[in-house]
Image (cartoon, rainbow, N blue to C red; front, side, top):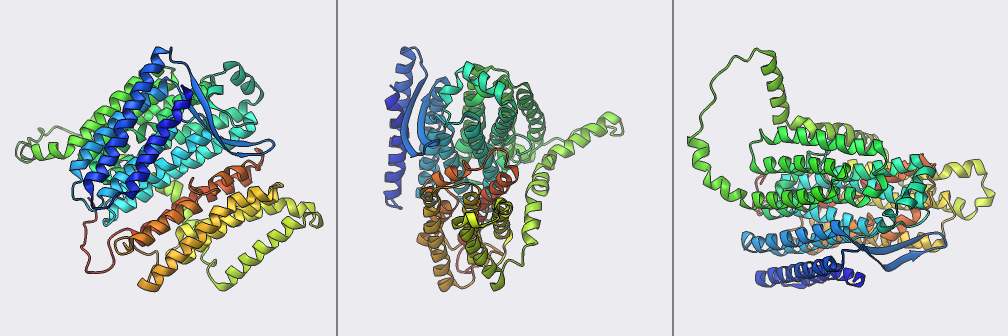
Length: 622
């Protein structure tokens, strides 16, 4: 039976590849490929789950393929199936099929019809990689695919300002979730001294023995899992991104932020529950986050003026309750709650445009204001204060920007001196000096040599922050990003004796992507002139091929699983010891902001209202 698990990844992958090859204007073929692939996948999941139940629902696990193997380290793809996977797979298959059928008519003659179905199948591939994953590496591949497809669907109406802006805002929170999951993988390698599979987490004796030996490390891993889950499922303090993500089409809002993607954090908690179920502090944090999110999100949902925002915060509140159920061990209830909430939010979002049109008359002509009451009592003042906080969404968006992103943006603006020829000459000299130290380690004083990894990791982080705040030439921002990747690799190579083959795996995808991206920007500049990052240019309309190639270059540069760099990043981070906190913080900082910066360049150059006046001008919001 376990051998069949790989089919549930292959079917959506084939569907996605076929949809890419379909003619852009043949809507019937495009939607037919998507619906056929989803139907086949859903029937397969249903038949497999039924047979699995008749066999006594055993835990299934299969090691699919080994991507990299060293003497003490291995990266492999593993698939796993249990009751949690069965519920998420069945719910996901049915909802995705219904949304695909709905979108076939809802997006008829829409310019991005093919783009929507391509992204929908890409999302479904990532979703299945997550729920069928048997280890953190496999889960992380799907986790990354989910983030990119989310950005592309939010920014689906790419000629408008707010969809693109909110897509970048969402991918920023997703990237924060990514680094927490990546740190979970890194800490788990040191905790287990192997690539741990989820089926081994069900071995209570093994888990308890490790917890007794490495209690503090287990708490750190559990907190990283919790933060990753909270950010992905829009729990406090990350709740504000979910309503902003509703700028995409109604059908993508239904499948992403009403039903499936928003519950992936719940899946992560359920999947890793055997690891943290006996850590009281972590369980208390999960309950606290879930309870506070449920209360605050419910208060916000009651006073919002837009239907999508109401549904978004209502869904967030229910997910908070599911967090509590997962922490208390009520997993069957959590799965039932997930299925009910997913179907309800999908239905509400799909019918929301019709409901608004039906109630227009009542909304404008049957409104009766409440009778005036004395508002000077303490109770009324407190109630009105909470009302105003709820209307303002508790300022979550502002607080998140002020305390999470603004400090890094200010730091990047302080680095304007990294722009001239002198600065570039210094960077080249510094990299050459680092290569010299790497090759001639014995001739370097050990005290100096031990400080080099932190120095180069700091330089890499500064380059990324400078690119993150760059408002000038896009090519300069791109070169800063590419340089930061080389300095990060150099820092970790100086920290440990990284083999040349391991370093080559990391740099192979980075070099190709950096060259391809720079070529795209240079070609665009030669034909269009100005490609500064002080506004949105919208070149995707007249340069769709360059837009697609540059997007692939961005994904390759940041280590997306389309190049060997994805494996190389995992390999390099495994050479950082668990006591090297400064080095891992600097490397993680670079890891977070490189995707945000790369997609920011892509968004500002190729998305937004086209700068040429003969293109139609879209409204700022949908």
